[in-house]
Image 1 (cartoon, rainbow, N blue to C red):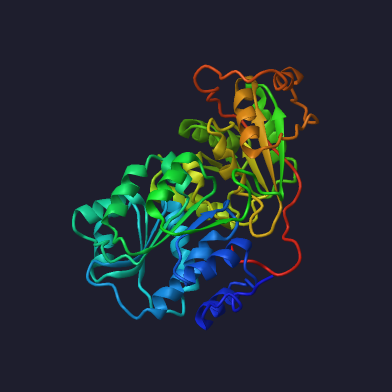
Image 2 (cartoon, rainbow, N blue to C red):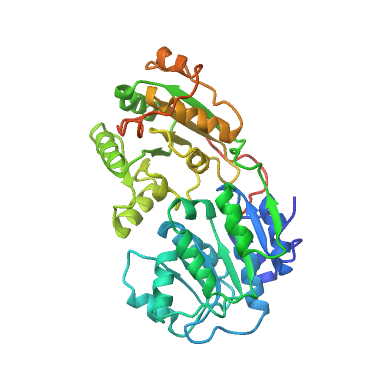
Length: 419
């Protein structure tokens, strides 16, 4: 195990990391920090929960501190692009936490809030800007921020960035950056589109892969539960009431489905909230705060909204609806088993979702074990798994009903690692 001092980080950063209770680096931090400190581009393939934010935040803070130059008016020295508002806020907090002893100016720029305070925060220039693509591009086009002085550019969760349709904005932003810069690109999966994007952004880079491409975290216990569509809600309630779920994220395919499912859970006595793109920024932040504090034990989310959820202690991820993009399965279940803990991922599969299950198993390169012990198990649906996968017509049912799981997730003994 490697300490942060051994990685060559300066004392103020080591002090801040130690104050958070982190003693040793995670594999991606151990690999990435020296490379970034040396000024090399990085292509990082790492799933959520591996500590990748600290892997780029810590060396960026050190490089900015050691280079005494300052950002000019409306200028930016380090630009971190991320796909969602919630994730931008989370990364901004990490920079604030780790940079608490450093005299660096930072701000978070996202949509969904007023533009004027953001314009004011950029007026005198910023060392670190964490942003979503649309808002920072808008401000740049209006002349409120200059990106021609960016020294370090980070593209985080590149695969989700492409999934959400931000590829054109990312390319436009990249065109505004200086050719001489340090570029770091991180992605949980590496589809062809991300590889192509990386090829256009990175120069003489080092590739870091802390887990095999498109595989799932080993500490996560995965199970598929074959159930008819009309019994999903009953199964979910059984699981959530079973006493083994401490904190759960339930994934629905649509915003409407997430809303309806959350309402049904609340009516059944479960403390639940929905989070998705149609919710206001304030409502999403309140739901996340309630989930983080424990006032809400179950968060019903869509794929896009869930990317900003960085909460330890999530014992279960429940796929009420299987994702129609198999790579999303990796992102979803990565919400549990964070910071050294274990977790459980349960996937409900109805007759219309067999093809999606087979696509997921192909991506993760392993079958998902079936749980046939629950009282709503459908042998007929389970039998469909044995036949050839036939793509269902259109999307599988948009029904929103519940699901469940088991086993705790306490932290294992030993040194704590930076998240």
